[in-house]
Length: 334
Image (cartoon, rainbow, N blue to C red):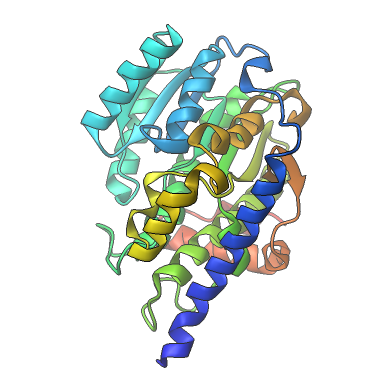
């Protein structure tokens, strides 16, 4: 593979990032949306947030708990999880936060998490698929999947499908259960290689990351199609948090780290700002019953053209079912 072809995914990702940063900078001088505290209380509702121990996920958990939700953090570090629970309880003065271990890079761990959750015999009104890795060196998950695709996408694909029955039972005509999946503007630069989803032919951390984020958008749209076809009281939306100052950038080039350190205060969103669209998608009355939306800065916007390819959505769904070992019930639907 030539040097030029290897650099193309990197350049496309960074160009997308620059455009998002400039857009965020313009918005800093515009009136901001109302804070999460203005949303109606969520007493009696239950949410699961993956990757809720740090960054955007932590802020999402904190705000949902502050609104009265019982929030379960799904994460792969027991110590980080318990520390997050302690801090959120102190900051929100609520005891409705707990941690359950879930390693999204392990299909076995995901199934064990779902079993533990079901044993609680509680409903599930909100599922936030937030966890992820970015630009990691080439490596495999426990099940042999490329890590970006395996953790960011397949882990959430399996988790969502295993929790669908509970979500369907919890949603009502007037208060739908909600699935919120966190993607990224990087998906605009992504290409889905159905014949090489594991990036075996030519690995690029930027290309693999962008592909995983595109897959999440395609998955969300297909999921909403199936939910609608089934008449389920569940909606699925995808959010773009923007460029946020979190630990996800630990694998970028050192030059980028230096630039980020010098300019983050101006160009990057804080984790709290980054979580605002996720929180809006989870509880806003304006989005009641609305599904299949791509949300950025609390507003509906257009995702990449390729993400609306229904045949690609269907083929990815079918292949994903095979990869995680679940039946493709969608094959019997339109």
